Every structure is written in structure tokens, then in C-alpha cells.
Length: 399
Image (cartoon, rainbow, N blue to C red; front, top):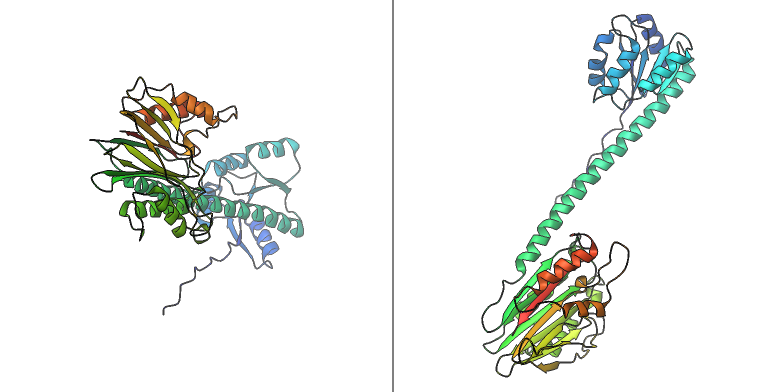
């Protein structure tokens, strides 16, 4: 077995001093002051015209700079250092032959960090070099940490976007024919756990479902995909998938929350039987779907398909779930949705009450197959943004 490789830690960056002064005697004096400090690397530049080039090469953690030099004025050089990308943030200690408040003020205004009368006491010089270098190195570490965090967040966002596209690719295409079904799904800013589906169990029975896993993130999404795969493949042994209560009871057996990292889910699962237009369903703590049913569209009345069954995964295996049924009229339209469709907070902080949500649905045109899209437009309008805090899922079925 090969041993895992450990990441090599880079050596800490040394305190690096660059002195810019046209007088070699000053350069030698400073070198002697710092000679005993083994952790300080010293560089000297006597040509101010090459100061920026030298700084880019040696990458100092602090710059000592004379103000009175031939060819290049010291204050002008301060400006050069501050516009140069490699030295823009490097601390600068200005050295002057005397205390001049006006010159000192100009130096600080141009970006100098400190001011010393040369030649300063070695103890004071070393203390200021260490102080400014430590602050600069801390700044570099912080910036590097922010950069790595930004890269990590970008990679995570890319992974979540790929995961979101994968989840959306699993959603079924619109169903046409004897029964029409069309879903609308808009993921939130975080990867969530909404999934819906429909498929024919046989020539007479159509299964419909919409589920919502607790929480957000990859774990919630993976659980939603796992539950969907079980339903679509009808892979629960000894289970009649035409009996919604039995299906949800077996889901509860399989997806116990203590085996799913504490996650659970709500689900509405229904089976439509063509022959007698019967809709059997079971609702495991999911928002109650809205059904319009009657002899015709104009005569249809609105009802909610309520249920009192528990969340999937919360109660022990063997917990029974109830199958209910309703006879559909000649005209019938069903809207199944997740809580992201109505638990909407307005910019003022108000929440949309469920009864107001149902009342709004009663006002919508429902014969053109776009209930989900028109509801989504209203949800975004109420929220004041196209970006939603939770997944939006809606499944419209026309019988």
C-alpha cells in the first residue's frame, strides 16, 4: 500500500529589507546594524533610477528610502513605488536628515508608512523593520487565504451548478396523450432536494409524485435522486406501486433518517386509474395539492388533497401510511408543488400565507397548461427577485 503524500509546507518568508540611498556609507552603516539579525535579509540600492526594478527582483517586506538623492526626487520615488504593482502595498520607511513637518506630511500623503531621521538608533530601526514587515506578511497571508477561499468557492459553485444541471436532466419530459403532465423546476441559490416524476405503471395506471428533502446541498440532492430512482425503477420488493400508502410506508422503511445523515423528506404520491378516473394518493407531510374537478372547466370546484401522514424517515419501520382516493370529474386539473412555491418572503419581510396562496391559485387560468410558469412569475414578483431562497417545483396534471 502506498503511503499518502503529505503537502509540503512552504518556508516562512523572511524579513527582507531594501535600502535605497545614493550614499554607500549609509548603506554600509545600515548593513552593520542588521548584520546580527539572522532572520533579516538585507539589500542595498545606490541608484534610485533602478530602485523599482531592484524591488521587483528582491521582493522586500519593507523599503527604507532616502528623500534627498540626485536624479530622482525622493518624494517622486515614493509615488513610483506606490503605482508599481509589485510594491504597491510594501511598507515604506522614509529616511531624512532632519525633522521637517511639511516634508513628513507630504511623504505620508504620498503613501509612506513611517518616517525616521537618519541614522536612527539600531534598536529602534530593527523594531520598526520587524513591525512593518510583520504587518505586511500578515497582509500577504490574508490576501492569499482570501484568494484560495475565492478559488474554493468558485470551484464549489461550479460543482453545484453541474450537480444542479444533472438533477434537472433527471426530470421527465412533458407527458401528452390521455393524461397531460408538465413540470416546472427552478433551483434555488443553493442545491436543494426537490424532485418530481410521473410514469406509467401499466396501461391503466399512471404514477405521479413530488418530493422535497430537508435542507440544502449535495446531501439533500443525492437523497432526492436516490428516492426518485427507487420510485421510477419500482425497486421496492414486495410492494404494489398502485397502492400509494404501501409505497410510502416502504419508503419510510428504506430511508430512515438515522441512516441518511439526519435527513428526511416529504412526498405526495398518487396513482391515477384511467378506467374509472380514480385518483388514489398518499401525502407524507407534503403541502396539499390543489385539484380542480367537475363536469367542465367552468363548473369545476377547487379542493385541496389533505392528509395527515408523517414525514418519510422520521417514524420507525413498519409505520402504516393511509391511501386515500377521489373520483375525478370529466374535467380535472391537479397542481402538486413544493413549499418553495408559497413560503415566500417579500422584501418587507412578510410571508405568504397558505390560504392566500390557494386563493391566488383559484384566480389563475388553468386550461393552457402553464399554471406552473404563471405561478412562478408571481412568486418571483412577490419575492422581489428572480433568485429564490428555496427550490421551486410545480407539477401540473390534466386528466
